[in-house]
Image (tube, rainbow, N blue to C red; front, side, top):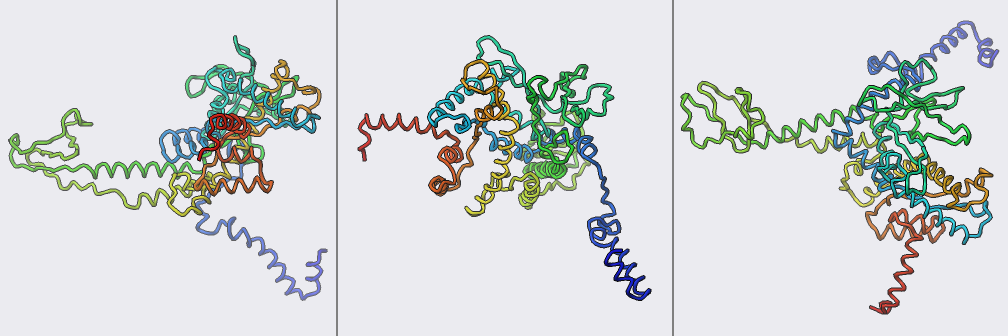
Length: 501
């Protein structure tokens, strides 16, 4: 008997009965009377289901993917959101700065720096040429852009390793990007462990089933099964670029999924307003006549057949710029008043942009590239946006760039182009060689002087480094800057410009 029951036993029966009734009423209080209520009018049309990741996400992914692509191709705000994120997260590509762990490897700082430069030089040979691409089309930095754009629009993107050393190439490692649609269930799939093309065995990720062509282009007749991990090496052989929302989720959700309805309606509204504005700009005069002979009407300025959009329809009358429209005898036109553009259009678009921006973590000032407020307000919007950009950059570097970098370094060491003793003997030693920092486009400055002074203070007090601040402010490499400055200073001194005023 719990404490409440013992207390009830000491009171009169009538009081005990009342207490018991009060306790039963608790079932209908708290969330049951608010967010979980079925009685309130606000919730009577609010139908929901308690599905897991498969029912809520996997079963709807094809529709979400198709609608997201349609919005990206035809709705400016959706296009701008995707491109804005792509440009600020990877831009022209994330570049690695080798930062090997000298302490673990027992190297002096000088030896570590020399090895870092060698690694960066070798990676540059591979990354800046098309030898890295299975299709021999793009370099590594262009592949980053494609992979990120695809994952944002479609929800996910896949990258598969392959090895093919073409004539004249130093490295055989190839990256093959695969659009999400191609990873799908094989025809007549009866395996319950395969969902949307991804197979689990004994609760673990096992394989990916890839259609040999895009299902939207041709009928799929053949599939390739790609094991998730190498049978001998145990290394990950497929990179799946997506962000998980639910436990048990296998496929990614497009960035625009939560705002599809808002963007669709905004696109329709924008089209209607543009059409209204165009019609409103067409000044057309209408002449009514009682006579069938209207050849002598002055200033006949009807639209020429070459300019008409509906010339094959005899019953069509078209408006135009400064056009005089003649009606047939007996015909009358009541009114031509297309009105004018909605003066509240801009405010409405901003209101929708705020909601869309909130959902995708992109302040509307950044989404619309409109900074009309104070410096402080604009900077606050940029800082909020860059929290998201940096988070996605970290994710992109961790799940795509770094694994590829490590696979490249494995080939470089195995082929003898980089000397890394112990690389294949100890995972800790291998990780020490593979450490790298990834830098991309700089944030940019609203007030460059203030930004530079703030960076200088962070370096002065040990909160950051010259390399990091150089990359953050300009996107450049501090080591390269130092080497270039050394050359420039020598030229200045040789030219006698160091004493110039």
